[in-house]
Amino acid sequence: MNVQFSSSKISTDDGLSPGETILHVDNISLSFGGVKAIQDVSFDIKKGEVRAIIGPNGAGKTSMLNVINGFYHPQQGTITYRGEERRKMRTHIAAKQGIARTFQNIALFTGMSTLDNIMAGRITLQKRNLIWHALWHGPAQREELEHRAAVEQIIDFLELEHIRKTPVGRLPYGLKKRVELGRALAAEPALLLLDEPMAGMNLEEKEDMSRFILDVNNQFGTTIALIEHDMGVVMDLSDRVMVLDYGRKIGDGTPDEVRNNQNVIDAYLGVPHDE
Amino acid sequence: MLYREAGDFKTNYAADQQTFPIKSERWLFWAFMAFAFFVVPFFIDDYWNKAVLMPLLIYAMAALGLNILTGYCGQVSLGTGGFMAVGAYAAYKLMTSFPGMDMFSVVILSGAVTAGVGILFGLPSLRIKGFYLAVATLAAQFFLVWMFNKFAWFYNYSASGQITAPERSIFGIAVTGPSTAPWATYLFALSILFVFAWVARNLTRGRLGRSWMAIRDMDIAAEIIGVSPLKAKLSAFAISSFYVGMAGAMFFANYLGSIEVTEAFGIEKSFLVLFMVIIGGLGSILGSFLGAAFLVLLPVLLKNIMVGYLGWPTDLAAHFQIMMVGALIVIFLIAEPHGMAQLWRLAKEKLRLWPFPY
Image 1: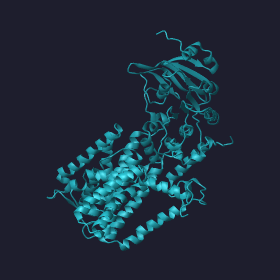
Image 2: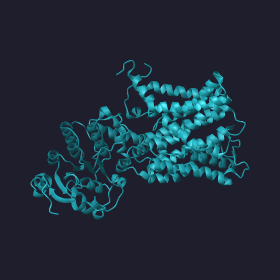
Image 3: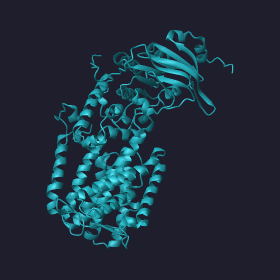
Image 4: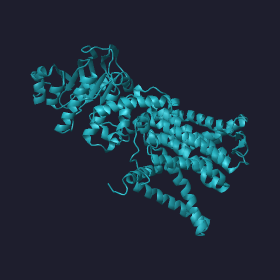
């Protein structure tokens, strides 16, 4: 890739140096009525790493992402994001603080074009108010064009040039996933949450997506938390892996450590539980 | 051959983002505007003004407002008639309380008053959506009409309960009251519509418009990318009501001159404007105009054909016209559920490739 990224345009610099803890989750418990989705889980995400969360179906992986970006409110425990402790928050405020995510089931704005979808990712970065927008010519247009230039970098990066003006409802599945990544990336997030970015893809699309994830991590320095079921992909991409099963953390460490963890092997191979 | 983009290159993002990206389209638009502004006023007579052009302009304004709310932000509203009534009564109170005020300010301020009322009735949208919200806005429709009937302060304690527009002017030219020239009211309404259609286009193409469309297409994802649902929904209600309020003010002051609220702003007004938006095309500025044109012009055209040309009795023609308009709405929606704006879009795609099919 010979794309130039001027740091002034797309940057995810947040004053933290690589290796510092960006997010710390402490003893989180989340339940829906009698269903205990997450039980007393603690882990951290460090700046600049690719952190995977894996586990069998219903283990609480997506719930964990939902807790991190404020969609669910845990009954117990605290979350420390960039040194700031929080318990309850609204998702749009999490977005303003630099947490972006993609969804397991694509959640694009189907009535809008690819370009508009990615531009929408920059809503938190655009500041001009209603009056300027009503007049358009002048500050509002200038701001719009600045952001368009930044979005074009992302379009270039994700190789979406040919579908720039196509309504996303018409796109095939693999491209939709890529547009969704673009939308999340457009917000210049400090922490990018990817919920099964490769679900339902064929081998070639998976390879493309893996390459994009690594490039995002390398070139933008974006910290990534990722849920994925394809073990080959997870073990290759991630720096550290956390394993959940029935809402509990059963393993945490480098891919090699996790691969050799007896609890993890049991969870995946289906050893009966003692309970 | 008329419509093509070959050779029409864009070298910067501003050119790529303009409203009419293709040269021939741009020319067509400005030629049409020049015709509307500089030719029509010289030939307009009272019949064309009252039966065709004024309703067209005013309903286009109301449809534009509802399209912002329903088409762009996805919040269904059945309160349009009630909000038009707010605009009309606000205009009446402003005109009678401040006789020196020019008509342009009256219309804008009436819109602003309606925007406030719109925010109030938009509050339920933060909790409920879809059909349930439609029912909640229906409450606005009935409550507002009841209120303007109940409290005599709104119609200045007149015996008939009607409100009648006194003569007000702009640049010394009367645009309301009994002694107005057709060209004056026409140009007044056209100018306001022109400016605010441009404003609507500006609002919908930028950050605000995208936050509305995000809420419409998937509200949870919208919130996760940083759209505040409260701000997006209430701003859509405010701006939509602003437009509808201005339409109501002009409907009363410039078009009819004298109204009674249950008759002029009943539930059928709400449905009429909603039909315009649906037939014209949800989420399209052009669609608001096409929808208004369809539902204003078609009955007039049918009436002229049946009564004027075929010589049928007027009552038969009136019934037949209602049936035909209804049937045409159904046919249109089956043929193109996304409205006339979508038809135009498809036609343009075909024209780009013409004479080749692919």
